[in-house]
Image (cartoon, rainbow, N blue to C red; front, side, top):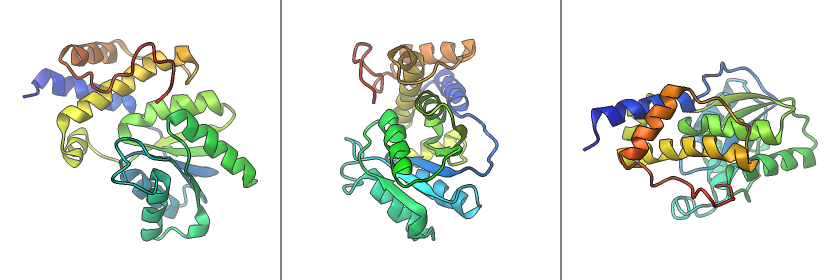
Length: 222
């Protein structure tokens, strides 16, 4: 049983991880690969709303997606977007990236090779990955403007969609740990973390939601 305090703390982290940007048209949309096809569905919706004329889906496979997306995350994302009416000509696929840094670097290289001028990026991720994705792109591609986006969803709705509250709590905690540690390793810019968010994070760690923490000495990005 998860305590009321832990639910409240997870809500604090959920709210912090989202950037709460106002949507506006951008040069390109980049959909970051994961287990969540909602990223592709949101990218398709925003394309239809005129928020970007081109979508890049980026991602290979991981331990959590290998069975569900055997052809690779970016390929499955593209297939879902095409099912939703996005024309093939409006989608590029970057199939090699295995972490957020590679998502950004390889997408940038792909767009340069396609001779696409990029002044702004509509960066689409899972809801709890918005801030981490923003900090990574700002580090690796500082000259572009960024609008962060994800599927609009309440925290309880997201937990229900995943079907495993403890897993979601672990992911929220892991994402915050990376925001705290990765700037020192050069993977992303440093962003301020309010005291109430740090306190919620520490309580959740103390409550055992630590299964998605990265090893402190790993020195590699995931």
